[in-house]
Image (cartoon, rainbow, N blue to C red; front, side, top):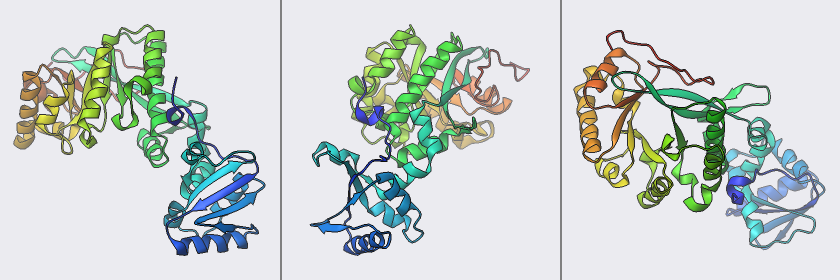
Length: 356
């Protein structure tokens, strides 16, 4: 069971009905009315709302998207709600209101929307090795969007567009489910790390129902799954994040914090959240073997982690020298291009650094 926000893909109706525009700037409202009249529509101003009857909502959006004189900032400032014939203007209807800019996006970015409508995601796997023996003990699951032509949409773009168009909730759920299913298909017996964005989860008991369902359906031992908080340094509501981590742990899963050492993550936060594992940010690891400042930061993070029973993973390891340093200074696990890049087919064995 999912809520509408993470279970419904927005679409543009091709049907007839009433379009309602609103904005906070009177001059923009006047410009809108003028543009609509130029395009042959018959807008009417009722209070602070511009209304017009249309034969096809999609045609209206397409018509306005072709206008080169509507700036992005104007499209972003115009709110648009469409009511199909017979639909009532009630409280539930307001949840469908979007800026004109977002309606333009839905119309003109079919590759992105198709990924959601067709669940066109693939999961790539990057190995995580134990130190010092470099045995693969886990894989991080990393999502990619698959476009209609078969090419991949990189994760940074996939998530950027999702955030900008209120689809992060939907995408985060799809990624978690796809990671579980794909790992099962690939017969991965090592642990799996699955990312989640805490701001995409309102109430764990509701928002994580489908994730729990697939974990049970695929008969995963919960202790094999590590749910990893991404962008943990951007989380302002630590109480909310703690409730999500506690939910996972109560179900028998383990938890990890990503990118520790970046942004404004501090040692008190690290201790307060009580994750099972931390991943020290690659910017700290890069060149750590010859940078005393990075060594000090790594040492402080490792010390407080170990004092609280938290394991340390060094991410972004790219050289044998970096590996040697983190191995000798507190990291139990490591991940990075030195071992393997993320790939659709998981690497089963790593070989590097002849001294190990």
